[in-house]
Length: 282
Image (cartoon, rainbow, N blue to C red; front, top):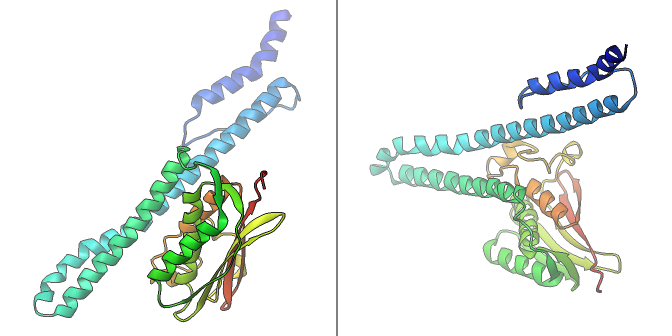
C-alpha cells in the first residue's frame, strides 16, 4: 500500500519530467495541471509561466529577424539593380546622376539601420550605460547647435533651457534627443517649426521636443515605440524611416529611469516629453 501511494503521489513528477524532455525552442509544450492544489501543482504553474516567457521571447526574436531581413531586402535590391542602368549614363548624365543618388540614398539607409540594429545588440549585452550626473542645459544646447548647422529648411527654436542635474548616461540621452528632433524634422514640412525646451522644477526635469508637422493618428500613438512599427509606410518612404528610432528612444529612457510622454494632433503637430527625476544632491 505504501509503494502504491508513493508511486501515485510521484506520478505528477513523472508527467513533468516527460513533458520537459520533449520541449524544444520552437515547440514549448505546457505541463498539464492537476486539480490538486499542492506543491507539485505550484511547480507546474511556475514552469508553465517560465515557458510562456521563453515562448514570447522566441517569437519576438523571430519577428525581429523577419522585420530586419525585410528592411534590408529593399535597399539591397535597389543597389543591385541600379548598376544595370548606369551604362545609359554615358549618353545621359541625368540617368547617371539618378543612379548614383539612388545608391547613396539606399547605402545611407542601410548604414542607419545596421547602426540601430547594433545598438540593440550592444544594449542586450548590458554595455550601454555609464551613468553619472550631467547638466541638462549643456546637453540640449549641444543638440540644438548641431541641428541648427545641419538643417536650414525649418525654424529651429531653443525656447527654454533650464540648468539642472540629472543622473543619466549623457551619450544615450543625447542620442534620444537627436531621435526626437530627427523625427520632428522628417515629418514637418519645410518652413515648419521645431521647438526644443528643457524645463526644471522642484519635482523633475523635462526635455520637450515639439513640432508643427503632420502629426500621428490617435490609434497609432501607443504603437509608435514598437520596433519596426511605422504609422504609414507611404509617408516614411521618402524620409527613409526604419521604424527603429522611437523604440531605441524608449529603451534609452527606461535604462536612464526616465518616462516618455507623447501627444499628437493629426495635421497640427507632435510633442514628445522625456521626464527625468531630480538628483538627490540638489
